[in-house]
Length: 93
Image 1 (cartoon, one colour):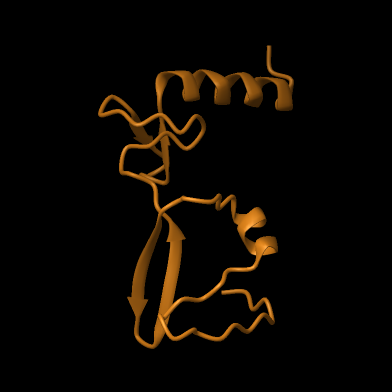
Image 2 (image 1 turned 180 degrees about the vertical axis):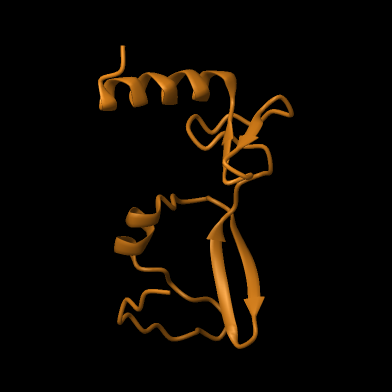
């Protein structure tokens, strides 16, 4: 885990402001949902993604597939886009 050096106080309603720099870096937009986990003494916030959401296109479907031991979920369009980018990046023919 990487320390940012940022410290925030909790207000009387239990709210904490996440700095705009972190939200931009992590792609968290206004009205996005965050999932809350507790690990021992730590509170962990992650951007909520419904299961079966394509990591490339954001498309949610039961037809999406998991690859790389479940680390990557792809829709058909996401797989096509990823394959095209891989071919271009590595100059495959």
